[in-house]
Length: 341
Image (cartoon, rainbow, N blue to C red; front, side, top):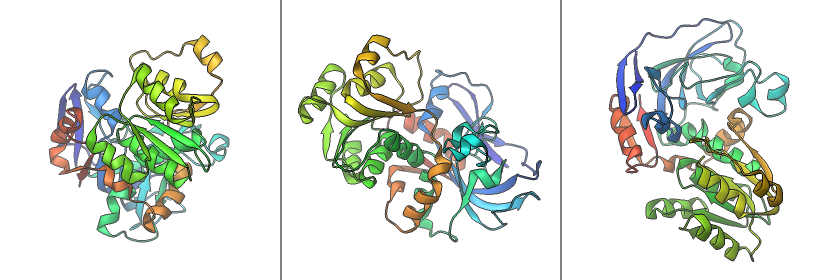
């Protein structure tokens, strides 16, 4: 099969990889229909994370081709959406809603690599969710978004306690931040402030539900949030970048007693000053999103066309042109690249 391998920073190749096979009775083998490039894939691409012949890709939808003897909830021919985290969905941590920290869990990125034609998914019953039938072609991008970026934005909004009567501020205008805007709108937030310095992303943020745009950062950005919230800060803040600046921006933009959901993968030695955090008096919850918790609901919303998160994909390329997709996102010519298989 063909699959994307990152040989080193900036060196993305589509090569022949060995076809995966069923190994454990809980496995499923799926033919990938669509996959995509994540913002987190840019960290190794830019040399921020180590990379050496790494199998790429962790967002995926496809059709079940084969199942292990112990798989009970899926059958050959099902169209499925999978989480970027492998989970059994039965352990005590999973049952508490944190499937991304399953006691048997692992990450799809690196170990499996779903920027490929085929993928073996362990713990298939706990990781994959079948759609009600074969989806219309135009639904596939939105179902793909549920695999990670929508689920991650949704977790951020839930962690930030977004809901009716709340003002939500979103730090970061990448794909996850934009999905955080959509999620906050769906959860009933009264006001949604998108922090964005890019005109095209501002337009999409408003389409997803943003009521206000703040195009400044640092002290000016915090002041702008305070000015929009009677000097108090937002009830709910979503952090979707993972830098020192974005984390401090998010903390300082949250009102005392407010909630901050952080899902940006931290890089470059992000540290939180204990004194500022102590006096901020905000609730913090974040980390790898337990997408599997939300998948049934998100699939239902997409299937019934209540939401259209697939609009976050602004570049579509065939798998063999993955290198161009990485380059376009790195150069900010694309928010998120969908790869067809």
